[in-house]
Image (cartoon, rainbow over all chains, first blue to last red; front, top):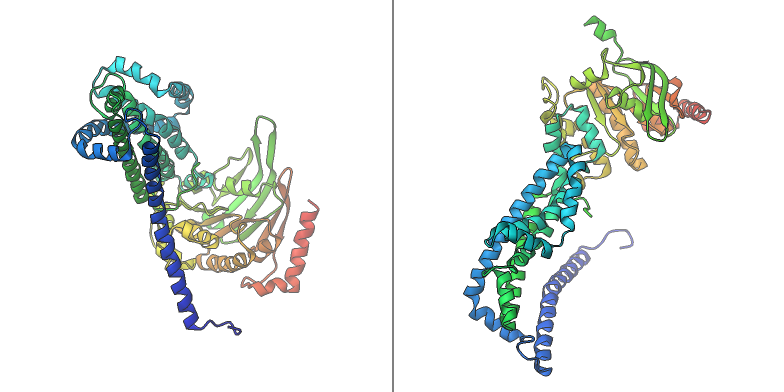
Length: 275
Length: 259
């Protein structure tokens, strides 16, 4: 070692130790979250048991699981409706946001005229928007889709405008030196530049679209996760209420991961820090 | 044809550039006149705020002259830009992060109506010229600062531009990398025979690279002196320790000191 060379056996041992440490780290990352969930469920079951919580106040985790199994078909039927509303709203809201962001970037005067209106609409809370849209669009799926779309729209619009505009000024000068047309600048520079911004907005929208659809179903609806939540609450059926919430959250999480996966496939270069 | 061969690569006559802002009007360049022949290597040296980057941008048709004129290859800067006779290397390389090295070099083929290929080298050949063979499919974030700047030089050389404009391209690099790239740039200049305008605020870089150094003074930016660098064309880094080089560097420093 003194002459600067490392014996081969030493390298192999160090590599083996490193691999073992990596392996331990991997298992710890997998097992610890599971242990956390298990501890949470156990203390929940323990508290319900010890404090003798009546079932109309809060259910035991066993009861929730039993309901999930017994009423699985019914839960899935209702989830399908909510999922469809959330997905349709997600698609509509984001497409509209992307289209309007494109217009804003090309026509500064349009941005100056209409951005305040957009901000104004965004300041109205979802629970207040819901009744307005139900009165406008009736009792079907339309008002729920509209609410989910509205809730997705704003973050995507803001991020998309920023992504399209925050192009490296030297890259912009490069395009000028190359005599690039506005169309080429848009597709070869701005759109690519906006993708990391767009995906960070889409990930927010994935969970808020589901919230929008559920809130929409709270008002005058007979099917869907939101309607089920209201019915279960009025019937003091806490096990069903909790099971419904679990199903709704699981769907949100899946939706979020699907978007994250898509992001990893589309944005292959190292994403800049998007704040 | 004959007139073209006589016409200098860049000729500025009484060029002034002013920027009007809300608070005040800044005179970036005032009454700048100079000329450089085709195939020359000109260093632009001066303190910050002397308008050397602005001068480069006038030649590239990124900034308009307020007064006077700048002829590029016997025509207007706009004509030279439209005919794709200019290559520009930016301070921060300005690579597109979603494109691999070779895709970045290919960008000039895809925009502005593309480039007449003719006998000019391919993107792959240019990456080899700048010493990046084998890195074609790497993304910019996988490359070091020096390598990114090499990609950007290869991109600027695509289509064999007649003038290469370089805006402090090695300013953000460490000294060792910078020295190596300086030597390579001289080799590339000799191989491609293109005219180079090179902005720097390093006395040594300016003197080592340039056949001539245009020393600029600040506030407002104006020509201090056009200095001929009396060194052999075939230069190497060891030359920077020679008596002749030290004398030139001292002269340049004296000019900057009296700005």
